[in-house]
Amino acid sequence: MADENNEDFPPQKLGTIWTAVYVTEFVVIFTINAFTIVAFARSHHLRKRTTYLIINLTVADLLVGAVAGPLGAFYIKTENGSGFSWREFFTGTVASIYPLASQINLSLISLECLHATLYPFRHCLIGKLLYFKIIICSWLVVLPLSFVMVGLELYVIRLPYAMLSYTVLTLLILTISYVIITVNVKKNPLPQHLGSVVSDRKLSVTLFIVIVASILTILPFAICISIPDDTWFDLFPGRSDHIIEAVTALYYANSIVNPLIYAIRMREFRKAVKKLIVGKNPEFRRVQPS
Image (cartoon, rainbow, N blue to C red; front, side, top):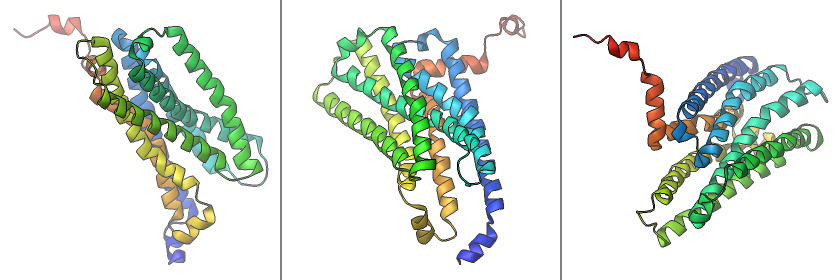
């Protein structure tokens, strides 16, 4: 059975199919996130403290499609597995920076929501400068982290423990933060006359949906990379490559989920998107049929 499956899907044909899938996925990721960034840039109401981390997350997701995707496809086509290669190391490192940045931004957003829920008035006093510092620090952490993780996994231990640990840590932060938020909101319902607090609560609900969707896309990948290749071949002979590629594609699909949820949940974002689609054309308005 394994031989028949391998004949139906030879490695070269399998690589071509999944390369096409990835290219299509990354084009969609880039397009949706670029449209989201334009919507944020065109609307002054969306550019505020509570959305700075969301904008940073959108930038990271856009770079997943613009940079990580092409480099990942190039890496798949050119890797030979014959010892150390600076090209392979550089490609793998740059391709991993932006997915890692996306995950760390999800964690930061969840921590921000947690702080806004537990200390709403103190959260309102946080200045813009602190957000900028947090965003800069997140990138300064991801850059060397990607170098270390790729070096460890490719050339030292050749095991996915570093990536697995990072993924599990981010998922734990997301889960614990929103469990605390849910318990706190149920025990201490917010007064409806506090407009800013209610707005933060609504944003927290939106981000909670984003986190749940992200967990559903990231968790299968975390489980997949924790299983050795030999075990995959034993469990799914002839099909292991398909499963691994599908789970990886699902992992990258996390960069599509976020802007779609914003469009559904955030009223101001929907208005900004509507303006981008319909547009304001005074000349068209003046030339109306009588």
